Length: 401
Image 1 (tube, rainbow, N blue to C red):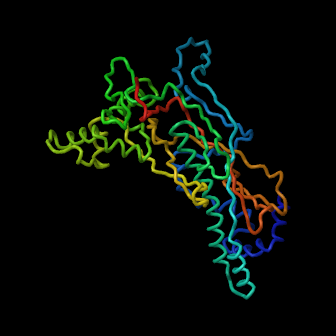
Image 2 (image 1 turned 45 degrees about the horizontal axis):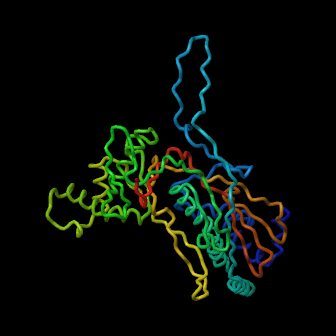
Image 3 (image 1 turned 90 degrees about the vertical axis):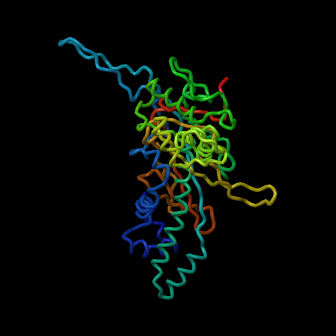
């Protein structure tokens, strides 16, 4: 591929940016894109929940293990002359599927680069201006992949799958499903936990009902988890995950206000409806009184574009990434990893060069079919949970019968 990359410098655009790249220590745009984007988005939210797999998946078929992988059976006592029995893999299964492709195109501002080209011809050093423009343009393009990774990652964490819509995948595939096969028996309705010798604290009402007890449902889910050995009993080693809107429903529910107010002030004749529970008080009550895992709130929104039928204009629409009808209980720490495959460079040419970033997990390609400076970024990747069997989910909008 080296001949393709070197040949691109016949373009006036590549000649224009060459000086700016060289001033920052990059010999080629291939070197720039291979390294520089790795520094831009180290704090992206998906990195808090997922790792990027250290090596590519060469088959493009992702694989996840469900159940049994984190809890090996005990060793057996054996005779001195005997060999140890082979550890069974019963209870563990593997799910596979094709790794999907995400991508977005972006047209650079031709006028801006032409203005810098004119200034350069007049003897003006425009390397800093070119560098800043490259960071902005390629940064915007790179951000689209990171945003989709975060959105998809939170969808998979919350419900175990992701179905694209016209809004969340504007211009792409609508109705495309990424299914990571959540374990059905680990999803509960409000008041639906049933354990021998345990008295339920939740009620058989959805959280939208004044008769619900959201904190009781969390207690039930935690007890279901540790008593069936799916999560550690130590509450500090697990976490409740929920969307910001779900958290507000929990915090502002009458049952929550009553419980926290009594814990903090004792019996009171004041109006519970007027009482406002603080985040700090709720966190302290959960830790000190209920002794259940802490709540981690996901407030990320993905932004898509959709055609407004009334104005006939494309508008930006925000969508909550973490499903607002689901509470997740799982072990603390990372939830999974993004498995990925390198994009093929088979069809790269001198006129339409291709460059890799993230060690191959992300690809940039100039689009010859577009007028002006137009690049496409893509990434063949999918968020894969470490072990779906050890994830419990509560449907807050459904009541047990």
